Image 1: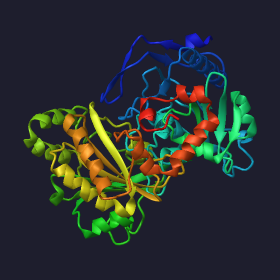
Image 2: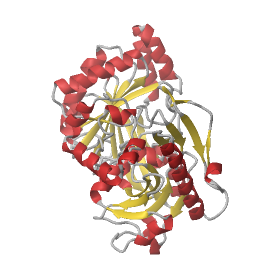
Image 3: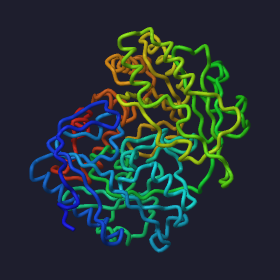
Image 4: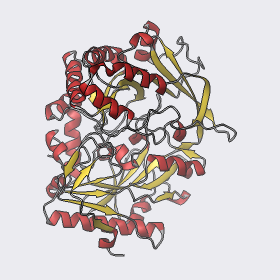
Length: 501
C-alpha cells in the first residue's frame, strides 16, 4: 500500500486539545492508519516508510511538524503551527520471543513488550491483563497514548516506582525522512542486536541519548515504537478516610513515614498514597487514600468506575459560575464531598481498574508542580495561602514518586511530591497559577512543572529548574539531529523555553 494511502490530510486547519483548553491554527492536519494486509511487522514497517515520506514532504515545504496521540496535554507541548499528525490509530503491539532478548538483559521475555506509539494506556491495561501482566504504574487517568505519556514525563502512581518513562527500555525514533534509529541504554540493553534490523532501523545504544530522548515532547523526532518492561498482574486494595491535617499527617507527607500513622493496613507500606485538600474546608480534614499491593486472584469484585464522579460538565459549569459569582464556593464544597466518599472496607481492583480512563472536564486546567518530598508541606502552605485568597474552583492533590532518570523528567528529585492544582480553564484560574508559581519562587522552594500541564513558558525558568541538564539535553539533541531536523521538530513551545537550539 502506498504511503499516501496510509496518511491523508483531513482538511481541518483548526485543532483543539482533548480538554478543549485551547485551539490552534495549523498549516495542515493529517490522520494515519496501518495497512490492513501483511504481518504485523510488515504493516509496522510500511507505516515507518509512510511516516518518513510524510516528513520528507514537510521538509520540502519548510514546515515544522508534531505527531500527537490523544491530545491529552493541557499545555501546548504537542502543538506546532505547521503540520500535525494524529497517530492514535497506530496501535500494533508485539510480544517478545526469547531469541529477541539481549543476552545481557537478565529478565524473562514475558517482561518485555514492543508497542506502536498510538497504544493508549487504557488499551495496554486491557491487553496486558489477558496475558497475566500489568504496567508498573500509570498516571491518575489514562487516556494518553504511551508515546504521549512518556514524552511529557507523566508521573506514575506508585510511591516506590517512578514515571511512565521509567519502564521504557527502548525507543524507535524517526529522525527525518532518511534516518530512523532503535535506541536503548548501553548500560542495560533489552532487545537483541537483530531487532533493530527487523525494523530496518539503525541500532544506537547510549545512556545519555536515551535519557534525553525519553522526555522530549516530540522534539527528538517521531517516536514510532516503544519497548516497555511490564510487571506480573496484581491487585490493589483501596481505602479512603477524611483525616485532620494535623502534625501527624504533615510528618507523614514530608517523610513518607507510615510507621506511626493510622492507615488501614499499618505497618504495611502502601503502593500508592494520596492526599487531597479542599482549600475552603481545611478544618474538615484531608481525604487520605492508601492502596496496597496484593497477589492477583480471580474471585474479586471490581470497583464501579465513575460511581461517584461529578460528570464531565460539573467542574466546567462551576468554573463559569465562579467566574461571575465567587459565592459559589459552597457548591464546590458539596461537589467535592460527593466525589470523595469514605472507603472503610477495601475496594479491590487491578491497576487499570483503580487508575482508569476517567472522565475529565472539558475546559480543564491544571498545573502539576514537583517538589522535594521534604518541602511538600511548606509548598502546600504557600499554595493554600494564594488559593484561598482567589476563590479558585478546584482542589489540591498530592502524589508521591521516586526520581526519574530522564534528563528533563519533572519528577527529578530523589523523592518527588507532585502537587496537582486542578480546576477549570478560566481567566481567574490562569491568574491564580501565575500567583502560585511566583509564591514558590519567592520562597526559594525547589520545584518543577509537568510538561503536559500549564507552566510558565520562560527559558530562564527552565534553566533555573534544570541547570546543566538543559545543556546535556540540547547536546544530545544536536548529536542525534542535524540542523534541518532540529528545526523540523522544534515548536512554539520549545522556542519559548529555549529548547529549539
